[in-house]
Length: 507
Ligand code: UN1
Image 1 (cartoon, rainbow, N blue to C red):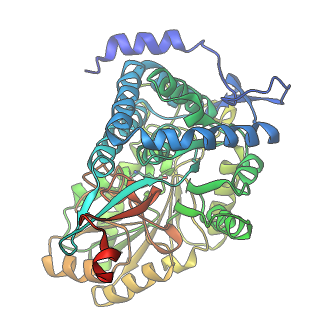
Image 2 (image 1 turned 180 degrees about the vertical axis):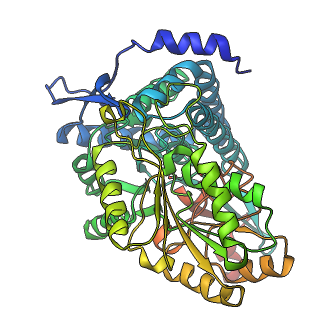
């Protein structure tokens, strides 16, 4: 159980610890060292990152390829036990993970706790999937004298490339699925958050997963490009922007070698529709959480809120009340609701977006930032009125909510416009009318549809997560089909008659 007082004391002790991230396979060469600073205080160094050099990437893939057949032959049960041992170690190191979530990624304590929970859930869920789908072959029908069975196996070496917004949960989630399926993994964490990834990999090795089977390759986009251009990579699991996923897809297509699998979970332009039957207090709570928790830095986060015109003014007034009550500041303080965005680039891109919208002349509400906010990457939470979701040309990954007024008779158009963005990740609906729910549910092209609740925080196994179209390839992380997508299928057909099939035919 999480007991707050001793935990806060431990976090204080860990405040001065310096961390580092290096490639698992080290050549002894001197690579460049980059500092990792707190997003909320750019003058405070949390640790350092040493990027993988090209020949270290090549050697890592060689080692991962050499051990992969043995890892596959180990079978689902043994791989499950190792992943579960890693989950246990993650829980034992709760304080270190929470400290790194806060200091390296700028997460609030609430978000840090949820992050670790999700990481552990992924490890345990995929361990069970290894047991369920990778232990005994599935018998298939056939005539008497013939035995047919289908089994699942690893494809080879998987590259797992993960984002900074879930530096632990997604960093460990895709490798856990790939490993469960009998692949070995080279993992490149986001350049902003390699330290928590390095701790995760170290604990996996301590749990008994061989070093060659799961290797860390820190670095920026160039390291990722070098990894995915290697023809020995059998598959890529990527979470991040739609543009990067498209670039990886092109790079995989351009290689000579096996036709690689791409599993991508990308951006969104997520909407919520609130009609006149919705309960205002509930809407307020869920809108504020969906748009501003995690400083809006979730691909599931709410970006465009449609409110029916009859209730528009009252509903917006209440939402603005909830918005004004948010505490913005240092994520290491217990009272903080909204911390920083990840880095100066993220901040300036959001500021440019808000400035352009302000020029448009429609109302814009912004929270005032705390004293000292300039030392870090803080973006004032913002609400902007506009006319349609189609006015947005791209995803704005931060604490910015757009609000649109609609008439009940136009609900069909609203859903069409949301679909027309081409993204299809999350959609929220607040309505007490079952016909409205059925209408929207039947038309919305999204991966995750949430009714009368917030639209973030999908739980492993209960709400498998992932979108369609510009939002990703599927299948859903934390769902029953995910691990199988990392695998290849093999069918064995045995003639069990004494003489063999051909002899029978010839007789
Ligand atoms: C992401 O933000 O990259 O449901 C995906 C949620 C999370 C989203 C993860 N599972 O909020």
